[in-house]
Image (cartoon, rainbow, N blue to C red; front, side, top):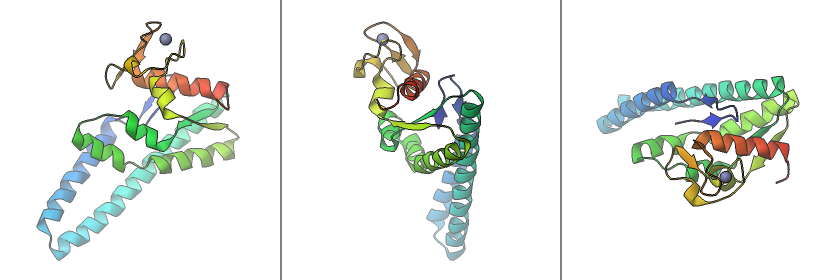
Length: 178
Ligand SMILES: [Zn+2]
């Protein structure tokens, strides 16, 4: 799972994050099955730990994104939140993980830190970033043969789907208001 992708192709989060979250989920399932008083207490503790982990991760990602944008004199484009979920089709266990990730919080942290740093932020329609060709701007669902692939049916441009989406976001920063 990638939480964020830049137009340079840098991806944030991923493997370590998923490992931690899978570990948390397994533990949670075990505790829920147990159902005892002490299990319930542990569950509460665990959800607090998970929330802190998510917040720490989001803070770290937001800081890196804003610092990099500031350093390279660029803006930041964020996808509309529902769109990230619609865009990503995953097997069920992963879908649960992704849905419970607080993209809203990440968006809020990025907006806040960007405002402090004087970095511009624009919000864009997620359907465009996932289905639009970043080279010729042709928008089609068939540009996405699978989850990770972008292949333009009009001009033939091919790239990792996240990288193509990142380029569309970068274009949105260059042409604000679109
Ligand atoms: Zn194209």
